[in-house]
Length: 361
Image (tube, rainbow, N blue to C red; front, side, top):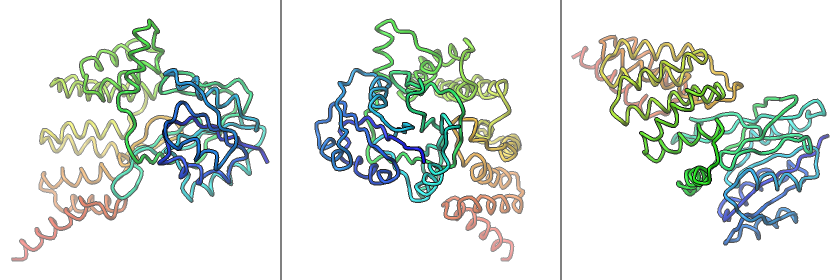
């Protein structure tokens, strides 16, 4: 059986590090912990699980720190996690099965990364990341922030997932600060960094700057198709914030030039028309969303609700407003099939029950 080195970079993670390592320590063969300047009990907790605890001075460069952690690995493969990641019980079992079947024909393993959740704990945002790579095969991290491994060779996709389970928010300004320091130093942003810089600007409500960065990213035509599609959505959000609704809708439609429509984009377009009480057009786009095939293996961001629950619950609203109450009720029940305990489903059931009572009075 192959061996796996877990390689992590950490800083002031005493609240979550133990939880992370307890979920994975018995699944890997070596644990490498690189501390970038903790002032709490992080290193003490790390040493409960491994003697291989190193220090690396923080230089505003995630790739540099992660590459240092990989350089200390001695196993066949390197795997990375953040301190607020965990492997939940079902994924621990999937990981064991994956490891048992992992052989020399695989260079990279892509695992699901679950990063958004609803109040019931169901995943609302997920995507694949290059999680396990063959050691000493020349695959290094790139990018001071929103870093990525430059992979090569045979890639395997797995249903095993890593859950990103934060207890408290990280520094909200860190990534933007790193990007802006890079620009001040005269460093050019590559397409991936440009895409994420635009997202960071939008997240900080600097919408006009974000719009300009994202338009430049798309105009230059060097981006990965999944980032292009997401950039169109982010650009639309910028235009909405700037009060330019026509440009927002145009940005959403422009995503169709890159590939087949994604359910996420169809739902955005549906929301555009729903917000303007144009029920028939909104219903059209939510229906199109239900026709889209979810393809996690493309590697892009995925919002699972867009492929079932969201268009169904919104079709319920649209059809009800159009006076088509029985169809609306049926879509509410379809929505319940995805999220039985959703408060919107319960509210709609009560509403339809009141209509029936009114008819019987």
